[in-house]
Amino acid sequence: MCDSAWESMEKFVKELARGGGNFYDGWMRDSHSAMISCNDGFRPVSFYIEKISASDKIL
Image 1 (cartoon, rainbow, N blue to C red):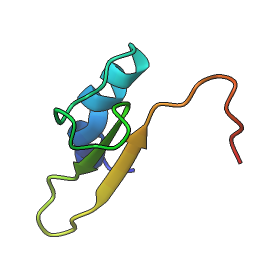
Image 2 (image 1 turned 90 degrees about the vertical axis):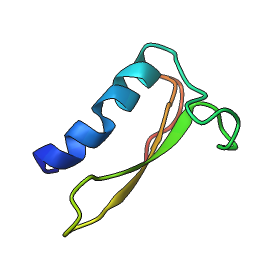
Image 3 (image 1 turned 30 degrees about the horizontal axis):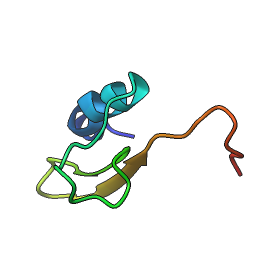
Image 4 (image 1 turned 30 degrees about the vertical axis):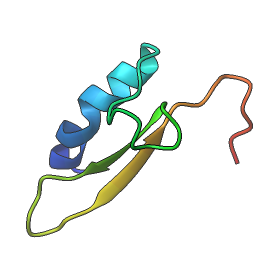
């Protein structure tokens, strides 16, 4: 992952890790998730970030 991508999502990831959420005032079906777009205009990438609990299975 490039530095620009991490800069775009860092504050959202940290807020989810602290238990926060509802970034878009009800626009996301899951209030503990976010759709983030990288700010690199030449190589645009979108990321879906969601909070998982320790008991969730990770495949």
